[in-house]
Amino acid sequence: MAKKSVVSEAQEIQLAIELIHLGARLQLLETEVSLSRERLLKLYKELKGVSPPKGMLPFSTDWFLTWQPNIHSSLFINIHKFLTDHAGASGIEAVMKAYKLYLEQMPPEPGVEPLLSLTRAWTLVRFFQSKMLAMAPCDKCQGKFVVDCLDLNHAYHCGLCNMPSRAGKTRKVRDAKDAKDASDAKDAHDAAAALLNA
Image 1 (tube, one colour):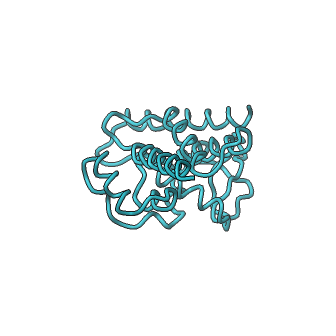
Image 2 (cartoon, helix red, strand yellow):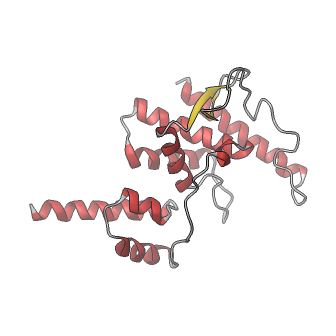
Image 3 (cartoon, helix red, strand yellow):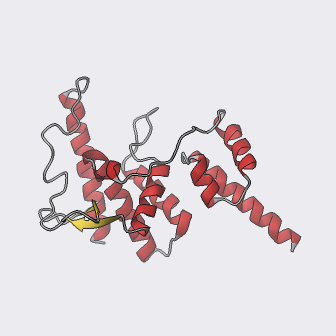
């Protein structure tokens, strides 16, 4: 019996290490891993060389509904749904597997954080579980995108088919960056559509 608990603790440590490497915040670790807060803090500092960031987790659905985050979030949640529906994945393992596949499709530039962090992806799944967010098909491309459950989503047009006029533009961003963002968004859209039609 003692041996089983040691194996279980080793598995929890391995899970915590993998989550930290993927960018998990402390609150996510405390929810998904049964190790003590002190142990998680020590592990985080050992792996990252710094203390974990302070502050609350995102608690609003608004971020997931803005133009570029919506495209990334929709890609992730389509992958997650595919894994839970067809590959027998569940819980934090499903989130981790879906997040790794998302990063393969949308790798960030070297030294740049992914637009959709693991903690946001995990929060997104929780919003879906609590029925705060849902998927709606785009009337034009038929891809499925993250929407607010309380919105009227009849005749919905996604952010790629109905791109905002200033999508991705800031004072410091040039046309080449806009073109890359649009290309990345289209790649995400195509990958999600391919998964849904598989």
